[in-house]
Length: 97
Ligand SMILES: [Zn+2]
Image (cartoon, rainbow, N blue to C red; front, side, top):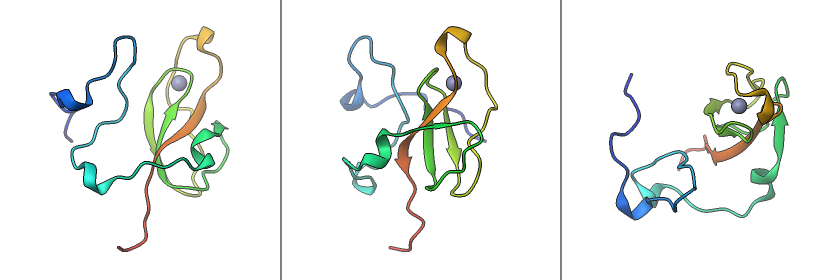
């Protein structure tokens, strides 16, 4: 298993105070979206309606969740962060292109 990318493209460098999120290399294979599905928080145990990379809005951890699977409770964060809340970061479209 490969680790996290060793370097971040300077073109994608974040602003001071902003924590970087999921990384990618091939920009042409991703597209930006304003869809409201990216604005919902999902609690642990709910079933995902979309496959993709999700980010815990409380602590920033990222994880892959498949459509139909339960959102996991497989990590810990400070109690002061509040409950685990998963938010879609990158939608994985399984349809053939
Ligand atoms: Zn968390």
